[in-house]
Image (cartoon, rainbow, N blue to C red):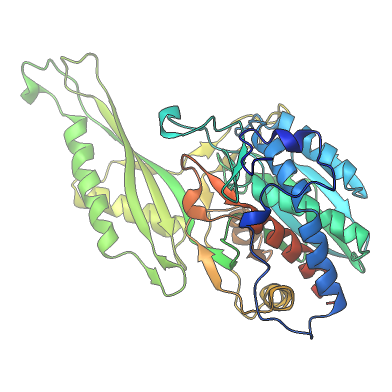
Length: 439
């Protein structure tokens, strides 16, 4: 049997136990120092994670081959429901926005694991060496759109949930495993709904976006802004009769660029940034002076930077360009979920950081050390996650740990290391055991 299976076909119907995994020649051990001090439960978790790896890979392949762009996640939600049922989750339900929530345990303390299960489009197919929605297992990786961002986290969560059941590790906790929707279009909208409408407020949330198996505890926030300026049209043969809105908006754009020289810096999260991502204009014809123009702005926010500060900075930039009459607005997200629901929100996604000594981070670090017998790297994301709503808006602590490296997110030939799936599922189960004092 070849170790390369282009279409994950051997995973579709399951594999016989006597057959070795396709990826076994390429998968490393869990790593860390050899020790006799690792407790029995830790060894049991690692053993189960390795034994279930074949199935974790199969789940990820099934998720990848089911396209699920923002607002069109219905089919992949059904795949997740089927896998949660097979893993014997205690309860599985779908909320009004379309998030799927699997529950294990019924304790008084609640901790949630989150994976958004929508993906971006594939982009130019010519940049891919294979069909991005026909997953393959090759060179120790699962390849396909969403394998890193972030269906790998979902697959590892389901396998971890099965382990919690098999090893009876729920204890005093209720563990919620959330497959969230519409994150790629509007970070955190899904959790705004879960918190406000479903009244779900965990002690903390484990965000399973890719971290390259590091522990993450924060990210810069972001927001979008639109700047508009008016002009006066006239015939292009006599432009002096009009007031060219493109010239005006261009001068504003140059002042906005200069903001990068003085935006705030945080030693952990880094520097705030701003960039113009789109410029538009309108005129009666291509032979007329434009009568209106607009800029679309992407603003990344570091610690201490807020929506109000960012809007005021753009207003000041327009004034320095000589156009204090320019308008600056934070647009609304008003797209429809696959359930038919609209749940509007501002395109403002606040910065968040969980302190290094917070109980959630401490628990994650201790679980990592016990399961992998080495020190973790504690870091932050460059991109944005659902933590903007969970922690940024609603002040519920977040900690991150996920398979794959974020540099491959949204990129052609996206691929997640198979060993990351094993390690992530082991970590999620170990964290549950750590919280219950069993590890």
